[in-house]
Image (cartoon, rainbow, N blue to C red; front, side, top):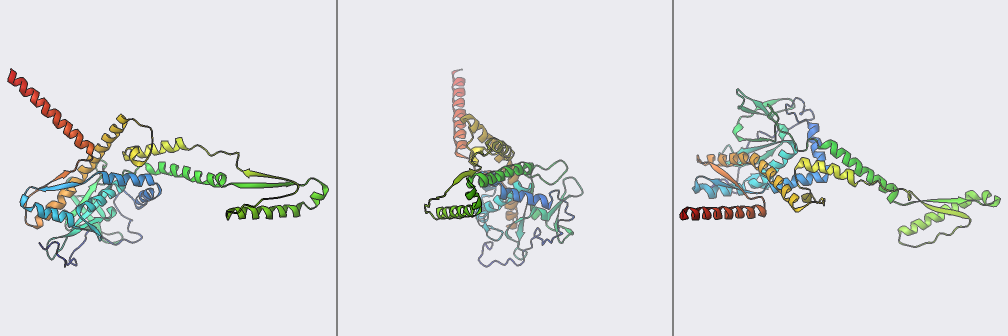
Length: 382
């Protein structure tokens, strides 16, 4: 097949969802997610490591899948396409595309992709992960007629010529709205308080943890008072030399004459205990992201039964994300088959999430087999 030939001419490939934006391109956008909100979600992932780790783990935990073609004669060709299709500039394979697609869906609430067709050969040239704010979704003549508009300039939108090549997915869209909601909605205020606590912890360690000394010289007589300034300067110089020598690993004694006292500044103060407020804030973040805390390295006290329940809740969340991605995978596969002139359909079979599911499924099959055997034995006796 000429789809993966070494000399591919992609000069005839037109990307409908890639448009150049200027400083005023966000003005007039119909998407409810503003550019400031998108930047806020990006900064959340950069600033709060636990949020970025949770989203990355969700993407990986969704797992892999197999695409089964109803026409078995083209199964090998379909597998070869899905494993080697070009994704963007450096990616390969549909799994790379789906991972980036899901990452954008979780972060922004909307994900946009495009199937690129070579106009000369009529074959798929690759897959493209587009920016969600480059697409405007509008209602057509009926409530189920979806129309896509792409940005052609600062304030101009043009109707997409080939909407069947657009891959769009919205996460939990509100009623009568085509746009989804990010899983990070509601976390900026919580994260702001959390980062303020961490900032205060750092400042307290700068003040208390980094030891500072107060050297006090008290002149005892009239003679000492007359030369108090000179002796104070000598004491300060000797103390500075001693501290400088300590930084180089040298031990140097400090010798003075008179009533000299040395105290550690802030030694009487204690750092504020932040375990409880930090844990309360992290509990809110973990509850919003629906991921067990032990997967994020949070060693909170839990029981085996509680861990199993948390794993079951996570499994239901992953199944929900799989249902969002299945139509996208089928659309890509069916489009590839249509370029070959095949009218067949495909089915997506997801891998089991973990080994525990395999064990439970095996136990369930064993219990069902035993029940059927007992029922058959009872029927024979009767």
